[in-house]
Length: 135
Image (tube, rainbow, N blue to C red):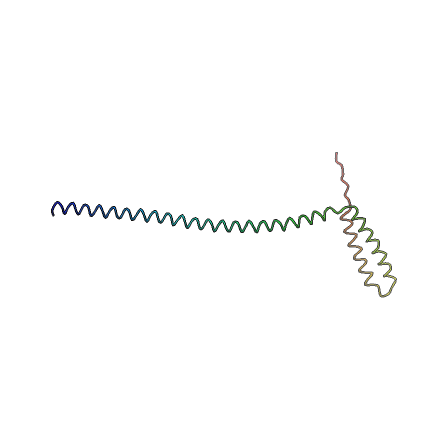
């Protein structure tokens, strides 16, 4: 082999090594970019799922809050409502006694007594509780 051939062989080896290294680096950079893109799409999908969960939780919160408001309004019933229920109880007692006088009014009497018992139970729930003072 001549000197020129040796130099040509060394240049070919160096050129192929540089070409291999350049291809490796560009492939590595492209792979990293694709990996980042895949990770970004996975993250965006997770973000969308979390947004959907947030919307569902918000809707459920609205629903629970409406239940809470209704329960709070119902718990604010006081003495006037209790007195109204006691008046209804008295009217139902009178109706039951009236229906008892008729032979055909047995069902009406029973229903009136049942309604009276239920109204008495509701009035008992609304009865104000006295706080005991402890020393």
